Amino acid sequence: MPHPHLIVLRTAATVVLSCLVGQAGWAAAFLGQDPGYRRFHEVGAWVTIAAAVVTAFVYVALRSSAGAVNVALAVLVAVGTLVQYALAASGSVAAHIFVGVLLAMLGTALTSWTYRHRMPEDTLRVPR
Image (cartoon, rainbow, N blue to C red):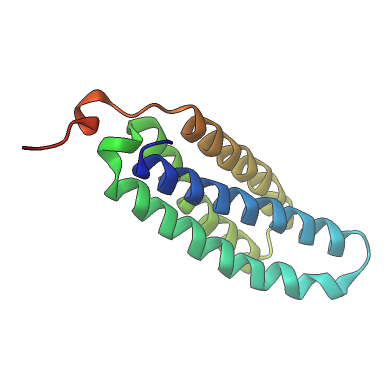
């Protein structure tokens, strides 16, 4: 069984990646000439932002277990979701789609790095 910190980190990364993939799906649905899905994409944006920000806080809180690369990726995903919201609000559709692809790649990297991550030796010791 993995260390409890890894279970929390992996769960958080998986939730964020699921939200990002879901957002891509809703976007594809309404860009495919069915505007009814736009509202789902708008609501999903708030869910994704919340998940990304919570995940970033989890990674920062567990930074000694997560490692610097994973913490940086988690923070970048959270910042990216906020940039996505700003781009959508400003009507910059092309930039919004481009950054969305980059954000999906960051979320995939975060999940992949987290699942391959091993706990540092000093975090495995039990204090006496």
